[in-house]
Image 1 (spheres, one colour):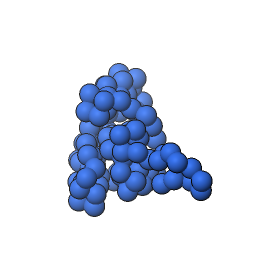
Image 2 (tube, helix red, strand yellow):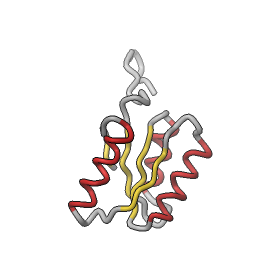
Image 3 (cartoon, helix red, strand yellow):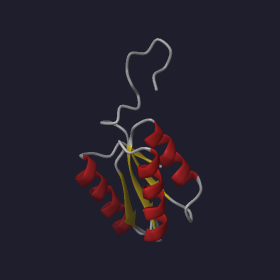
Image 4 (cartoon, helix red, strand yellow):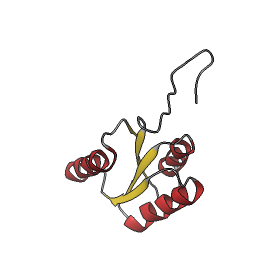
Length: 100
């Protein structure tokens, strides 16, 4: 996705990685993850219910086979869980550029 007259690909799959919070397999977390994946970004889907995150990752992987979508469990109300999720994103993808 490049802006008019721009020569920089803002959604270079090597740059954008989204850490998203799902809300019972719907909502802004899942939708933003899908949009980032559509542009070629790898995503880490996070939910307190791992089954929801896994469903989202499976959906993204099925739609966009060239994208790496990973699920993890975390309670975003707990700092240690958020830190662990960020560390997982960095370990899996090399860095974390975007959190939604």
